[in-house]
Length: 265
Image (cartoon, rainbow, N blue to C red; front, top):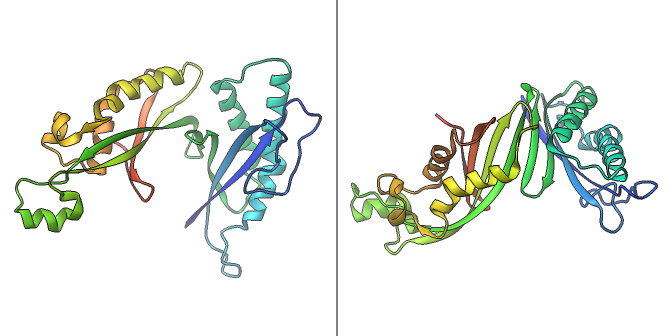
């Protein structure tokens, strides 16, 4: 079984008589004119590979289906709400995504639609999954800067160098870390993204940002501050702190090439 993901980017001009199709799908189609709302829908499909084509499904088929059946739902709804000066909340987006999932799921047969994600900004995403159709996954990225040294006092100097390489530098070294926190909930009606940010900052980011993890964070006096252990620490700090929703995962990047996700015990 294979899983294939495809992102479809599009813009909405809610006050123009029609959307501008454009010719650059990498940027956005519809393309948008002037200052437009930029959104991205990502689908994840699963199926076997067709032995004659080597495809799970041709991605042009995905693009066509999403643009014909998914994008208009968003464009029409956004246009209608904006022209009435009405706010679009997360509960509205949840209902819209539920409808979009239902409309799209039979357009990729025999592939199964496993996930539908809406990227609200480059750092905020809402996701719905076929395995839990009444659950919304909300993800947001944060950043912090910190230094650390990877070292095990039980090892000899040479063993530490063999195990950790340059990361065992005696003076330490630093990273600009990214963290993505994902929560899950059955309804976004009572979810407050500002309160969510406060919890993440207060219980995790503020404790590690601009810190020497080995010296300033008590947890890492007994745990080597690898990204594996940092993601686990993030989970430990945040689990049970969110009202009316549940922590799903914590992902930590120490570079654009290296990340670790912890899903709990």
